[in-house]
Every structure is written in C-alpha cells, then in structure tokens.
Amino acid sequence: MQTFRALVTEINTEGKVTNEVQSLPRSFIPMDGVLIRVQYSSLNFKDALSANGHKGITRNYPHIPGIDAAGVVEEDPTGTFLAGTRVLVTGFDMGMNAHGGLSEYICVPANWVIEIPPTLSTRTAMQWGTAGLTAAMAIDALVSNHVSPEKGDVLVTGASGGVGMISIQLLKKLGYSVVALNGKPQLNNTLLDLGAARVISRQKFSEEPVRALYAMDYVGAIDTLGGDFLVQLVKRLKYGGSVAVCGMAAGIEIPLQVYPFILRGIRMLGIYSADSSLAYKQKIWTSIANEWMLDLDSICQEISLDEVPRILEKMLMGTSSGRYIVKI
Ligand SMILES: NC(=O)c1ccc[n+]([C@@H]2O[C@H](COP(=O)([O-])OP(=O)(O)OC[C@H]3O[C@@H](n4cnc5c(N)ncnc54)[C@H](OP(=O)(O)O)[C@@H]3O)[C@@H](O)[C@H]2O)c1
Image 1 (cartoon, rainbow, N blue to C red):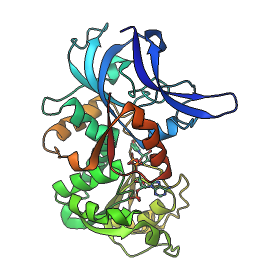
Image 2: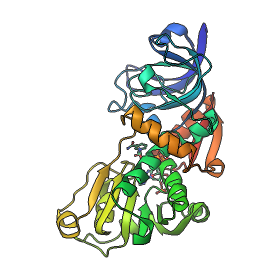
Image 3: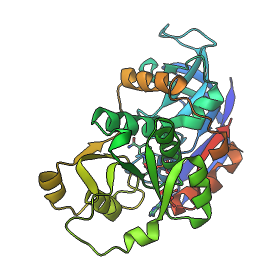
C-alpha cells in the first residue's frame, strides 16, 4: 500500500470545516498497530459531530472520522492476529483522536480488535456497528436490572435512528412490548413493522406540561435523546423501573428532581459502548452473532465513501433514519 483513500475532515484558519475523500500517503496513519484493510464502515451520530469539527469529540484536524470498521488483517506486528483474519473495531479512540474507519486502511492497537464471529460477515457486523452494539448493551443493562417482558412496556426514544431501530427489533425479538417515540410521522408504519406495539409523537411528548411525576407508563426505557425527553421519561417509569441512558441527540442538561428515585426507586443506567472493555464487547458480539441475531437489511442503506458527507449532514439535522453502512 503506497497510498490509500479516506474521508478527511479539515478546518481552515477561519474555522471553516470541509469533508473530502482524498488519496493519502501511507505515512498519514501511524503504522504501530494491527494494519487492517477495511471492507465496510458505518455511520454514527458521533461521526457527524467529529466531521463537523466538534472539539469535544476530535481535538486535532486534519482527521479521518469513522468510529466503526470491519475488514481483514493485513499485517500484525504484535502477532495477535494472523493475516487474513476477519476483524472489527468499534469505538475506543478510533474516529475520535485516532484516525478512523472511513478509510481503506486503519492501523490500531491489538487490544481494540475483535475477531468477527463466524456467523457474521464484515457487512453484517457493520449493519450493527456501534449503534447496534449500544442497543444490545442497553438491553443487556435493562435485563440485568430486572426489566422483564411481563412487567410492562419499554419506551425507545430517537426511534427512527440507528440505536432506536435496532433497539426496537431486539426488544421485540426478546418478547418485550415496545413503545417508539418518533419525530417523523412518515416513519410510524416502518416502526410498527419493525416490532413497535405503539408509536407516540415526539412533538406531543415535548408539549406535555412539566410535572414532578407522571403516570407510571413504562418499566424500562432506552433513551438516545437526553435533555427534557429523558427528564420526562424518568418521571414516567414504574416502581423499580430503569432507563438505559445512551445519547444526547436533543440535549445534555437534565433538570431533574429526586422524586422518581426516592418515591419510585427508579434507576438510570449509563451506557458507553466505546470504552467498554474488550471482554464485554466480545461477550455482546457473541450474543449478537447467536441468540440475538437480527435481519437488519430493511433498516440499512449501503453508500459509498463519496456519499458520506451528505449523510453526516442529515444526521446532524436529525433528518436521517436507520443505519448507513459504507462500502469502502
Ligand atoms: N452511549 C453510547 O455508547 C452511544 C453509542 C452510540 C450512539 N450514542 C448516542 O445516541 C444518540 C443516537 O445515536 P444514533 O446513532 O442512533 O443517531 P441517529 O441515527 O442520528 O438517530 C438519532 C435520532 O434522534 C432523533 N433526533 C435527532 N436529532 C434530534 C433533535 N435535535 N431533537 C430531538 N430528537 C432528535 C431522531 O429520531 P426521531 O425522529 O425518531 O425522534 C434521530 O433519528 C446520539 O446522541 C449518539 O451520540 C451513544
């Protein structure tokens, strides 16, 4: 490999951010880890932030975004992986402060790399990607906190997004009754087809007058929105219910009183898939490849590297839906 193609985010001296597919010399990426020929990547909200110059995600530019990658090992100086092994990488610092997976090649530490289970292809692994891993970890956390199907409904917010749609499908597969909170009425039927028992409007939810507590509607929730949405759903959990807190698509502040905790014993379970231990990631990928296997074809669109900037913009505006996998 003398040169390789990758999406490069740059910020000029006036602060203008550009995203462009470029041909780069091998020296652009540090060659001190496992060299992987990427076959597929996928798009996540964090990529949209990184490619928009968000310094909380990526400090230094020019930068190759992409928190997900799946492909084949080309060289491994650590001797951990044989050349030709099918592997995936999600999270850790990849695509944040280390160059990412929207690239023909990545070079990453061996302890970020997972051998892909035999029942998954590099393509299906990226259909799940970080969004799917996060949905699976959120459900694992709910199950560990005794949120079981017979106890009541589970609410999924940001339902039309990547984490949301996979959460709906996996919860349904595990026997839960799922309520989807969605801001795109044109996708209500899609969410019902995926397995939601009911869809409620994000706009209506946000217009509810603020109260200390609401009726106890849900035994569990997977929240990708944060902000006032998270505040309201916490106040709607049943006694002993739990919410897996995953995202901040709608806001980072949560002005919350203690009542739901001390009067209803509810739990907030923080989910951070990127820096979860390699062992925990491997455990969840094993479940995904076996008893949690899903057909994600209907929610995934395959795009090229050149189409990535346009889709990342849609993700930032909240107008994208489902999962985008990138054929490299
Ligand atoms: N904790 C973790 O480990 C982890 C991992 C992956 C992702 N995340 C976070 O989870 C969130 C969702 O990720 P994703 O990959 O599913 O993103 P996504 O595919 O872009 O979906 C986000 C969804 O949130 C809703 N939304 C977007 N912008 C909004 C806004 N301004 N106000 C209200 N709702 C908005 C939309 O759904 P509706 O129109 O259906 O409401 C949208 O489809 C992000 O904050 C991401 O950073 C966290």
